Image 1 (cartoon, rainbow, N blue to C red):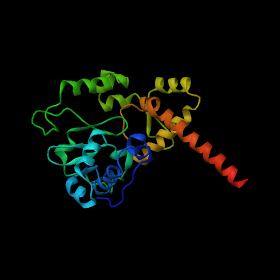
Image 2 (cartoon, helix red, strand yellow):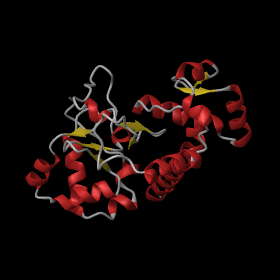
Image 3 (cartoon, rainbow, N blue to C red):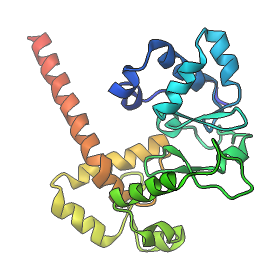
Image 4 (cartoon, one colour):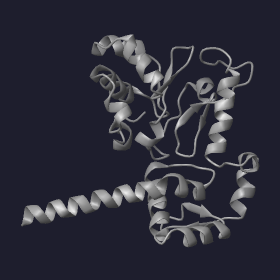
Length: 238
């Protein structure tokens, strides 16, 4: 297991995170430092006692959806794969395979509690109809058609071509044409996602949807920060 951990500024600099009590924020960082290479922590209560936090802090992290608890007492950090990326030769899979099997990753690599089989452990009982409905609504909001959800990775990749310096971005010909039509900076968008995948080990079923859903905004934010820094540097250099 790696001894060094990272935290993504896009997670810990949000209002949702910063508005939590400092003790809750502190607990999140301590959980992150002690998690295994898949983001699982086996002893959150021990960590709470060690750092002088309380169980309300853990409950807040659950409520705000920064962690997912299991009936076994194990927790997992939802944004683990955004915060951390390990090379394959350094990665050691978690021993909590049963809990891991209950999770699904969304297109951003964020853990969500999936719908397990009847013989699997779940958190807080069987998922309710409301939870199932939320999952379906989430797919509809993200414009993910049912046919795309069920298609096999092999058949999907067969119709796609690789783009970017590291050849990480997979796009169909018609998807590339749509990007060229809709975005004048389409090359920059592909470059951003290509480098993000290379650094983070990010996985997604549709790179085209990734670009439309979050890469466009991420590039805007990145360029905005770059302009501010340039103006600040020019001002300081007089």
